[in-house]
Length: 286
Image 1: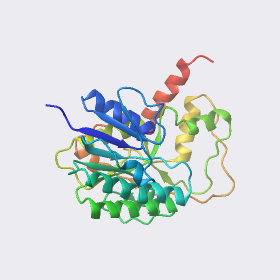
Image 2 (image 1 turned 135 degrees about the horizontal axis):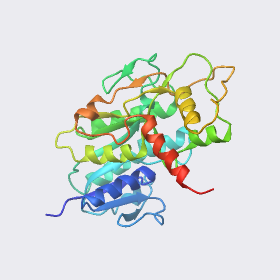
Image 3 (image 1 turned 120 degrees about the vertical axis):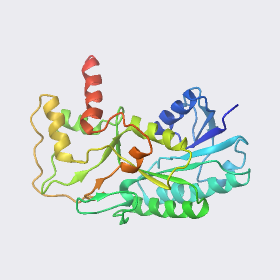
Image 4 (image 1 turned 45 degrees about the vertical axis):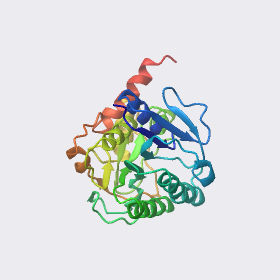
């Protein structure tokens, strides 16, 4: 029996990785983007703009499941509002006009949590976002759960991995600086685990309304920087003299719900994930 098709609404790096995993399971996968020329086979290109409701009028009739994961072209409030509020509403309305939805998985961010003084937070913790991106994502989450009550939200920690090696590049290039002041926790997840977790959640028979996507090991930025430097045979990055403002807050993300759902992380801490990046760098000739 043919499985229902999946729509990746916004198909960047995470979307492509997720789509290839789904295709390997035998799913038919559409990748919706404004420009579709770079989508790899077997993903099926679907050219549309989430901010333009008219462009969504002719969606394929066999779409059942959706992963909503667009990437704003600019880190501006208007761009986030256009995609995560207007774009989400446009897509839900377009899909409703075709028939019943299967599962809608909304990829959000741990930016919705804000400051928690280094305490552990999970899916039930209060959300006090510090910046516009967290506020708009939280607003989109709440709208979605009213409009599509059985939708699932995945709140991602900071994503790193191949092509997302800015921290490594800073350590290698000498521009890395350890934050001044008391160490504050940061949270991260390898891009392969983001894709793997999204596919896992899409396949759960009875998912919870929300999941935190993070590894097992919250760590301060300075700890990660010093570990990278040590692995590369470099001195620890110098420390800033003045503490800067943080827009993400000091908290430790608890991934227990994701773990208990049956997902096994490929990289349960930053050492495992960054270790694969460093190993690839060593294999690459100068």
